[in-house]
Length: 338
Ligand SMILES: NC(=O)c1ccc[n+]([C@@H]2O[C@H](COP(=O)([O-])OP(=O)(O)OC[C@H]3O[C@@H](n4cnc5c(N)ncnc54)[C@H](O)[C@@H]3O)[C@@H](O)[C@H]2O)c1
Image (cartoon, rainbow, N blue to C red):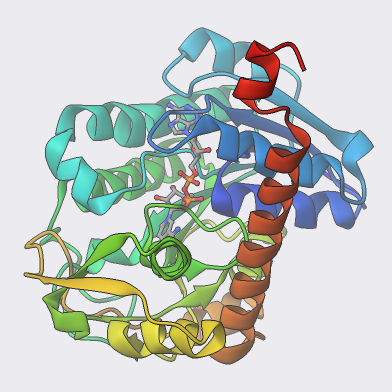
């Protein structure tokens, strides 16, 4: 049976994939996003256009608005939803060190607003998208029972606080809330501030990018469509309150990840060594036993396949941009009345 779902952060990298998956299987999706300028809103419009060009687009409605706006949320939730997926957030670990108040307001305050509106709107199930950063510098593989009380950045601390707010709403109001801790996602529509995108950009433009910690940091790169599948599985299963890792389960060194992209491109990225930031974890790695058990989650896309797909998307996007630039009359031409 199809469901009505409210998805915050719908214009983002992961949000656009989850929206597309839900529409493709017949659900109705109301997407909320404020097109925050952390990275270019025009990219987010590209994401929305991709969703609007896909199957089931007639069942998609986009609402431009902010999760800090309680009145807006109250009005939206009066519409009745079967589930809410809360992805909207400021998502940069390093930028949270520069803008801690913004991170607290959006990632904690915004989550509280969504929880309050959801319980007043009698929503059955909420899925909060959290992060492996909650584990701090714990030793991988991370298990959900590991203490997560030493966050390394305001971003991680705010996400952990949001997780705990979910628990309190479950406890007091009986709202079912699954907290999914995502590990480094990558793939088509990749966020431009993330390493996967920066490496491609550097390969194609020659732009310098910092290689933090000599490329020795380890990350559990997870293909975005696997992530979307896990989120959809959580939407379908109200579980009470559970924290669940959603990762690939095969951590890889940053240097190896970069090399796999360089190999495909046949060119090197312009990497400049830089010290690891104290806000970055040394290593991440997911134990996904619980996701397998509770969500039937099984990652399907290998790192090789995922990187190929990321690469294809990047090159096709570049081609589309070049074609669009060629179609535009040059400024000189316009000035001379050609
Ligand atoms: N990408 C990853 O590897 C990763 C890893 C762990 C967790 N996460 C989490 O997954 C979620 C999605 O991340 P993403 O990589 O797609 O990032 P993203 O920045 O592409 O998406 C987030 C979206 O939220 C929107 N947003 C921000 N503030 C808002 C506000 N106040 N009101 C309404 N909308 C707002 C943004 O405009 C954006 O479209 C985030 O919660 C992030 O913390 C991502």
